[in-house]
Amino acid sequence: MRKIGNQLTARLLHILQVEITFLVSLILMALIVNYIAFPIQVDGKSMDPTLHDKDFGFASVISLHTEELERFDVVIVKVDQEYWVKRIIALPNETIRCENNEIYVNGKLIDQTFLDQTYVLDEIKEHHVFTGDFDEIQLKDDEVFLMGDNRVHSLDSRIMGPFKLEQIHAKDLYIVWPFNHWRVVK
Image: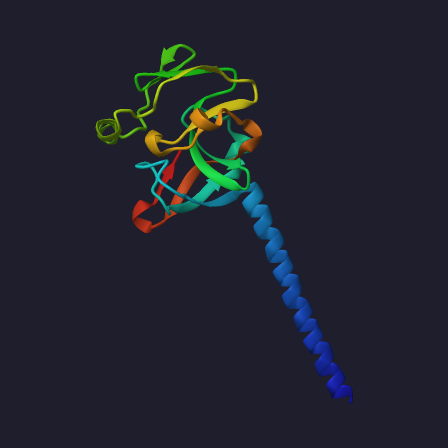
């Protein structure tokens, strides 16, 4: 009888160890995802050709809290229950407008060297527009203006309006899959 009791105790201890290991793993994973590196898969072509549909990587949550946001940073923004990958075009308290596919921030034309100019010209040739004109928008001290790099196919601040700083979940993107797309996008 004692042997059966010892076996039962050993099984219960083993089950308890497995459950504790599982619980600790979940807690560690939640801490990593919320405070260190956020896993993200690109959905759609709003960031083409910089990022491609189904690219998978990690965004830095730590960098968001240790570095200032800068113009042209790639960020992960939470919209309802989804996470989108976009680029910061204008920062808090700035003004932004677009005229003839040219973007002006605080009245000055900005140079968007991150855009693939051949791709931009091809999109203009096909769609007769790339960014689309919009009147000047004044951002508040807790707002940023975000756009996808593929403006013709991007749902962003031009349609949704400015995003709140609190919606930004992470910045910078480290693509790890597929392997031939591996790179850091900042």
